Length: 262
Image 1 (tube, rainbow, N blue to C red):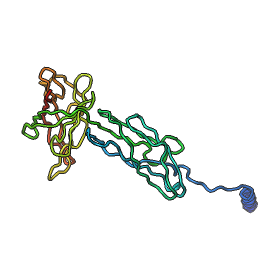
Image 2: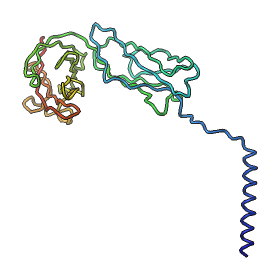
Image 3: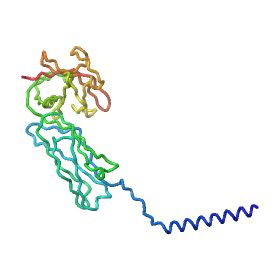
Image 4: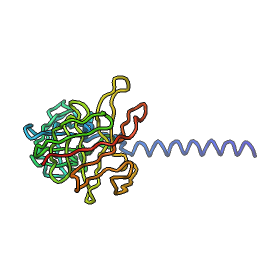
């Protein structure tokens, strides 16, 4: 009985092998190719692009393509979320070219603009890289003068201030030369200061600021409240409570005021 079972198993195995061979001979096998390893993508954007009235306004964007497509010439189309930027009709790649830098003109429209540039067609989007280039573009308008009183600097100084349309203001070289502080106002005159580089510490490196209350999501609505950031129309003064911090930790919250000459 055991011998019968043994020979039966051999027979079934042999028949299976013949059947499998026959099937594979009749089937035209196509090796698997990773169709997702193709397409176009962007390198990462900088934190922001800031332009003064006298500047030539444009941003430089690097478009890349996957190695699997870099052997032949190709083109890709882009789209933008705002008409602040003027895109080329298409971006052309020569054979063997994997990266392309393009210069994109920016309109002279004062304000704080968040712009997304995207690979236009789904079939051209790379599966493993950023297909949207997000850039905050700040265009300065009217040049004003102001007085900045800083708890952090322990001083009062004259500053150049640019109006950003109806969005807010740019305090030029606020804490140190080369680093402006940009703030916006909501419809309740609360001041919002998003995270941005403010100054550099000799030991700890880059120091950033953001509005203390906006980071907590709280707006108490009174300039007497510790941590208030807002505009007081009676005194024509902007109050900013800014949290200063770096990679090693926080320096604390500082009360700053800006009075613009009218």
